[in-house]
Structure formats: structure tokens, C-alpha cells
Image (cartoon, rainbow, N blue to C red):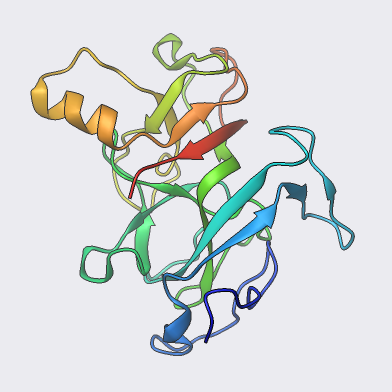
Length: 202
């Protein structure tokens, strides 16, 4: 298998497997897609983020036990780091990656393989609460928002980073950035789409 192989399924799609080890050789593989709107059968350039921009995605397996929904931040399963995810992000500035925004509303089923965005424009979801502390503008650095559990509705969302914390908290805010906001959020923009340029170091 060459590193230059074509992606095994399109953006918005999944591998369609239902067994934990099925197609495991695809786990962790990365591919570049054009920055297009893949919600239709004939993808068109997406102006947001630049029509010529590329988006790097990684194939991971859903090992959470539930269906994972598009636009939320997924966290790596520690036992299969970089290959599988076991739910949404739950702690402030936890490492997380946007789940393919073009998945159907029902998301990706448990055990199936799908894409997360590791670099380039991706749509994420904002806080459910109308908090003035989570207002941001284009260019703001964003991190994962805290939540009660990895499967609740408040999990896997983005928040503006906070550099006023103690040393350990500050390190997480810097190291685990999701990326930079490409659109603004006001207090009223709850549970709304936020375009983010994902940029992380490996």
C-alpha cells in the first residue's frame, strides 16, 4: 500500500464497518482533500477558508460505544493513540480534533472508521450557554471546552483559550490548541457553527 493511495471513502462518508478490527490497516492514515462543500453530490469550492485551501484528514475508528456526531471535537483513545477515538473532549483545553462536518446528522456508528480534521478549515460547534466569557473573533485561538462527560451534549465544543491559569493549565491552553477562529462568536451564538483553521503540531 502506497502513501499516495486514494482515500478509501469520500468526505462525509465512512468505511461502513461494524467489527472492531475490520479494515484496521486504514487506522491513522492521512489524506488531503480540497476545501469544498461536500454536502452535495457535486462538491463546490467553499469560499470560507479559501477556495484553494487543502484540508488534511486522518482516518480513525470510533471506539466510544455510541454514534459520534459531526462538528464535535473527538479525543484519542489512549490505548490506541492516533488511531481510535473514545468520545468527545470533556476537559478544558484537552487535545481534540473536529469530526468530519459532512457526516450525516446521525454521525458515525460505533466501530466504524471515519475522518477527523487535523489541519485546515473545519466547522466546529460553540458553547450551549450564552456566556460572555466565551466570545471570540476571527483570529482568536480556540481550545476544547469543559464538559461533564465524554458523551453529553456539552462535550466536544470549542472555547476561546485562557492564558491566565496556573502553570499546568496554561501549558494545556498553549499545547492543545484546536486552531484559530475564522469567524466570530457573540454571546448569542450558542450551539452555532464556528469555522476554525485547525493547526496542530505532531
